[in-house]
Amino acid sequence: MPDIAYWLIGVGLAFDLFGCIGLVRLPDVYNRAQAATKCVTLGTCVMLAGVAVAAFGESGGAIWPMGIKAIICAVFILLTSPVAAHAICRGAYLSGVPLWPGSVEDAFGPRAQDIRNEQAAAQTQRAEHEETQAS
Amino acid sequence: MKWLMCMLSVLGLWLLLFWSLDPWVIGTGVFFALIVGGLLGEIYPDGIAKALDPRRWFFLLVFLPYFLWYCMRANVDVALRVIHPDVPIRPGIVKVRTTLAGEMSRTFLANCITLTPGTLTVDIDGQDFYIHWLNIDTDDEARRTAEICGRFEPLLRRIFE
Image (cartoon, each protein chain N blue to C red):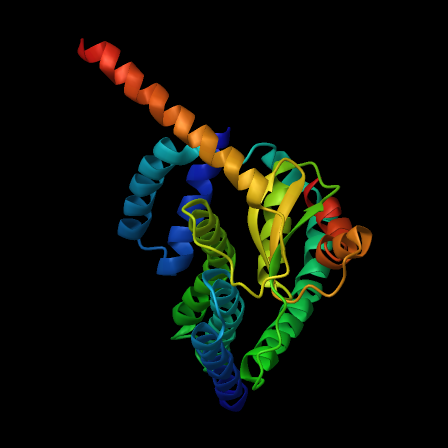
């Protein structure tokens, strides 16, 4: 049982390492977010699975709570890290971070312009509203 | 109903984290469940009664290993690209259309897309997904849709719709 746990933790560490190398080697925000979400999410989840295996493999059940916490953490990371990556990329695009020049396609441009216009309209509306309230 | 479900799930999570049935633990758990449920019950997902259908749980159990397999493949693929001396990528943002209509199923599809082969959901507009793709390998709309969403759509529809 401990052998399996160590193997899982080792594999998880390897994936985390690849994620970090990707963070350095890939060109722009969007590509880096790809490496950061995929490799690091799976790497960390595999490590937590290793911790859970180690905890449940121990006789007596004295450290079961650790295993349960590890599993709950893995579920939370799986649910939240894609949302965070999505928010970072969307925010980066809307605030004008350009795609890497080697990118072959950009279908998001028109939609992003729409969103920016909407936000600008909402902002001017709010400013006008405040002005009328102040006067 | 929604508020009650939210409180119960928060309490369940609390008890799992503490892993004891001490009266003090249960008491503080109920206290915080009431606060959290009262504040956030509003945004708890609708139609929670669907979760009682055992068929949905069966498909969820089928889906998990299937998803983990693709997740694994995605990771190996990205890791190989990253350590390759030339960094062979053809990135870009593409637009695909999904056939899923439910809010919950689309959310999960977006998350699954983000966690699998070189794709990352940048934005959702109704049923249009804007995907940042690490390695665009085809110009054909239908093949792109099949490659990005097609893998998960049938199972997610059975689970959430």
